[in-house]
Structures are given as C-alpha cells and as structure tokens.
Image (cartoon, rainbow, N blue to C red):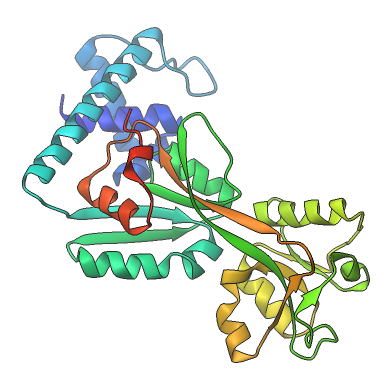
Length: 299
C-alpha cells in the first residue's frame, strides 16, 4: 500500500462519490473503484457496503478510513516540516471563492503574494457560495472565501474584512445626483437582485423586512458582474458590495449612494478545513491576507 492509495480512499469516503474522488486525484472513476477493491484484497476484508444504495462503509472500512486520515496527516506534516527546515516556500495554493471577492477583493493580495513568492502557483476557482463550502469539506481546495460565513463543525472560519453594502443606480437616474438615500425610498423603485439563495441577497431581503418593505425584484442574477451591467443599462437599481463598484463609479458608468443614518456591512471570511496541515506557502498566504496564524488550528 502506498500513501496515494490511502488518500484516494479517504477522498472517496469524504465525498461519498467515486466520480468526485476521481476528479480530486486526477484519475478515472474506474481507477478509484479498482483502488478500493485493491485495498479490500490487501486487508482481506470488505471496506464498502455495496448492498446499500447510498455509499456506506463497513465497520472495518471506517477503521481503515480513520487510520488513513492519521497517516495522511502525519505524512503531510512531515513534508511541511522538511520544507520549513529547508526554508522552501513552493507548491500550489488552491482557492475557491465567490465572484465578488475573487474579482474585487482578492487580486491585490494575490499580486503581492506572487511577487514575494514566485515559486508558488495560485489557482482560483469562481463558485457559488454553497459550492465553496463543499470544496472545503471535500478537500478540493486549500482555502475558500465567502460572504456572510456560516459556522460548520469541520470548517475553520477566519474573519477577513467587512465591506459596506451600497445602492447603485445608472448615472441618469433621479437618485444619482445624491450621496445618500433612505431605505424606505426604494419602495417605488425597480429593483435588481441576486438569486434568492445567495447570502448577499438574503442580507438585502433582511434589510427590507426590517424596514417593512415588500419589494419584488424585476430581475435576479447569480453574480455581481451581471447585476452591474443590468443597472448600467437602466433596468433598475441594486444593493451591492461597495468594493465591487469602485471602478464603475470612478468611470461614471454607475452612481453610488450610501444609506442615510445606517451602515449595512457584509462580513467576508476565509474558510479552511479543520485538521488540514498548513504548508509553508499556505502560512505565508494567510500572512499576506493580514490574518493571525495562531487562529489557524492544525488539529
């Protein structure tokens, strides 16, 4: 048995999917199945209960999984310690992020990180919020970035920064010449929103409920860029994170208004799978983001 065999088996158990385990390890679904059967032959016992419709381990399979996790942790910890002894900062950092953070909050940090550590590759995937959590739980990525983070038992949540929610309008809109607006004034406006399952949309809906407003969006989109384009061509107004519209406001393609007497914030956070070993590159990335390493627990 090689360490790769145990990693594939652990990925299979955690994703409960042969196809997902295959994708994580860059092999075919058939190869994952063959690896599982090879482990069963090696240990001379069934590890997967194939009589069940859903993926389920036998008692022996669960014990092998527990030991596999211990071995993988020890192996990864050894690799990291050897890199630190050699003062090596290299490898690949995989990030899963929602569009608004990945396009508008993250780039300056990645630019600085790559300048300081050119031997490290950074791969960024843009995902819906729920899929970012899934990527973290399945060990498909090293870090996730989300807004309005939700606590989960297996995920470490590190507060990153807060962003203000602001109102945007097309430049020719009657509200565009103002710098502030009352929330209640939005009652008569055409409103463009994010899809209902997106955390920022839920926060905006909460704002409306607090002010006893019943607003039915004229359009709903799943990403910030489409929302901005719809506002620019005068299909309506929208509430968005301030950091996402800096360029458009500067260029004059959008007008931005703050809410009078009230500040609505959008908390951003870094997600990390509990129990994962931090490589030197991952530790440096966290430092670049301005977060404290003591908060990152390896066990």
